[in-house]
Amino acid sequence: MFILSCEPATCAVPEWHKELFKGHEETLTAEGWSPGSLNLAQAFATKLRTLLAHGDITKLLIDFSRRPDDPERFSRFSKRLTEEQQRKLDERHHLAHLNLLKQRIREELSKEGQALHLSIRADDRPGMAVVELVFDPSREIESGFVRKWADTLRAAAPELTIHTVPDPNYGLSSALREEFPPVFGSVSVVAARSSFLEGKPLRWDKLKKLLLETMPKA
Image (cartoon, rainbow, N blue to C red; front, side, top):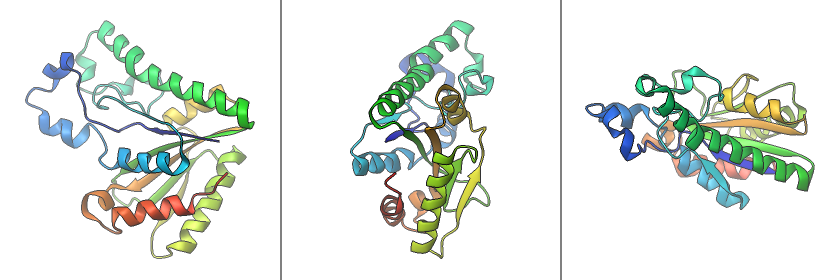
């Protein structure tokens, strides 16, 4: 019943847009993706034996995690592009990603009668928990899943901070919810990037194992 995605997977730039980042290579590396995200998402895909949809270019060209009508999907770099260039970025990357997810959701709903999308990423913000589960509390498929997962995580690792974050307005998830009935849900799984980069507060391999072993089956 799971559909997996990872939006900030890479900082890759197509050859025809490399001029945009000339002299800003460090910014591209620092801000253009989220290290650890793809590694974590691939671990989930392996565990669940399912396909993974992921962003194929840097979010400094187009942010896959935002709604398709959000002007902020374009960064300060890509806002310098022409309208035609932005339209092509939308069609080839952002909308292609969104449509792939929708196709997989329809297939899963047809087969299983319900579907749960997990958008997986690593992040690093001041005051962030080691694990955050972001969901829409009005959808029982999401709130029940998140509640069960958070309880199991806290029981397995009481020393770690685990937060459940009610946020029905998270861009990609909100766009998908508008398309599908309440038997569908979309949850963001956010792990501390410091574990990937520094092994703190928990080694990355241990954090991945913890998430995979405690995740509810349905």
